[in-house]
Length: 201
Image (tube, rainbow, N blue to C red):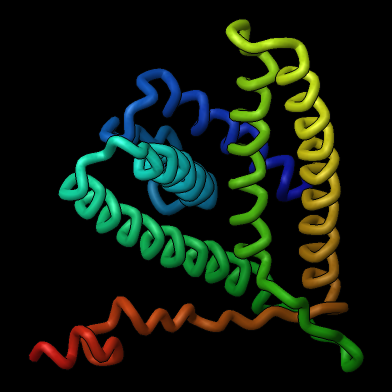
């Protein structure tokens, strides 16, 4: 099984599970064994799904400024959780391919496998929500047609990205490419690196 074939039903299940309540405060009920790759993929998409809705809520022009600030803090934490999880998924791949003999002519990719999977997770969300727009009954046909055109592009993009991810993993497994993981050194979250924070000490 290709890795993106493993991802697909997990991402789709996470999105469906979230939309049972469609509430950002719904507790996650991850159905997969803890610390398995399936567990991490479900958690990754759940974080993406909740954050998708955070981003919708914060754009409400009538939102209370105090509530917006609280939500901004939640978005910041969600971004950090997302980054941490991507790095954990990359650690899974580093361990999986640690014994591969790398070809002398091997090249490195522009992004790690997990950051490509991050984009795939978000693409599943885009497809879900664009399909919802296509299915709306309270809009005119022009709206639905425009959304269908966008949906068709997203579906093609998902096919292409899935193929590219699987090809990258095949290349890493064969030693034609190698991977490095650079930790996301986010300075604004670090009280020792953000001048606004360390200036207030």
